[in-house]
Length: 153
Image 1: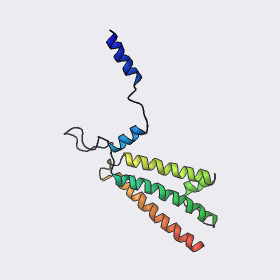
Image 2: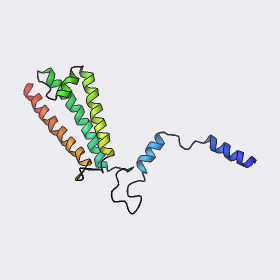
Image 3: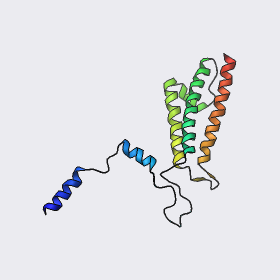
């Protein structure tokens, strides 16, 4: 009887499910779900490990979005007009609201696309390709705005 109480006390004192930075680090470096769980699975959607290219695209898209927000505000100060009607309405509430909502929308979209990177859109192409498209779009938009800033200066 005393032995089982000692084991119960030992289990109660050390909580193995505590979350900390060690958990994040080991979960990132030693993620286990990279392939199929069963032999009859044909396409896995949700995994623990994503290709580093998706990380590059997601972070790059966020950086390009920040650059776009900054250059948009600079161009508006110099007399340009926001063409996107949704962002123009958001811009009417102030620049901080504009920047926060832009980063929130871009970040949420990035998270969803990375999470669903292996899913197929309309049974044709993987959703991860949309990250490449958005990254390319923001790169072109940044170049376009940079050229306009050079012309205005």
